[in-house]
Structures are given as structure tokens and as C-alpha cells.
Amino acid sequence: MKTIITLDKANQAYGFPQLNGNAHYDDIISDSGITANTISATTYYNLPVSPDVGYYTTTGITTGQSLTWDKTYWGISGNSNVDLVLPSVVGKEGYYLIIKDEAGICGTYRIRLTPSSGTIDNNNYVDMNINYMSLTCMVRGGNWYLI
Image (cartoon, rainbow, N blue to C red; front, side):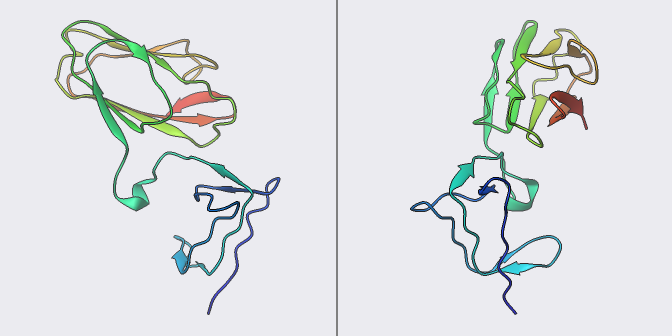
């Protein structure tokens, strides 16, 4: 049985690429078991890759910088304090980033996350200070939350 799913939030489909003005996939199965034959949209929002797909977009950095939405996973391996600025939360409800101390250095050299807008769990910044720790930061209600 085929079911047509309509994602109707101001004619926007979230998470499906736009193909000639419309997104179209055959036999897309969601976690709820719904099978879709066609998903149409006039606008595409490039959401970070979900764990269901089996991979993340990744990068490794060694110095402080402003993070962007083109990567989901940010691996840190510096040899000094690293200050990271999280991107704007405007229009990014449900988006998330993963930040990981890949070098095991943040017990000695802190990794500081500072939002460019909003707060992180009602704080102006969060320091990572346990070797090899990671944080997953999700946007909700105009702020960042650690999950």
C-alpha cells in the first residue's frame, strides 16, 4: 500500500532535496512505518544528516572558529584552548551539532562553546573539560540545548 505524505508547513518539505521544484522519492519509509510514494515541496531546507542515514558530514579542526551548518560533526584536536562559536539558531529548530574532543586534550586545554544567538541550557557558554568528551547541541525555541 502506498501513501502520499504531504508536508504542509507553508509549502515546505523538510529534509528532502528539491528536484526541479519538487522532491520525489519512491518507497520512502519513516520510523513510524508509513510508506510514501511521492513527497512534493517548493522549498528545500538542508537539514543535518540524521542518524537514520548512517553517516554524518564531518570535519576536524585545531583552532577556534565559528561553526557552520554545513557539517554535523566537529572533531577537535588542538594543543591550546579552543573557542568555538555556535551558528545562529534563527530558522534552525531541531538542527543539531556534535562537538568531540578527538585528541583527549580538553582536560588540559578547554574547548569553549559560545552561541552566536540564544543560550546553551540557559548559560552564555559551556566549557568542555573532560578528555575525549563530546557534546550534542540541539536548537529548540531559539536556544541551544545539550542532549
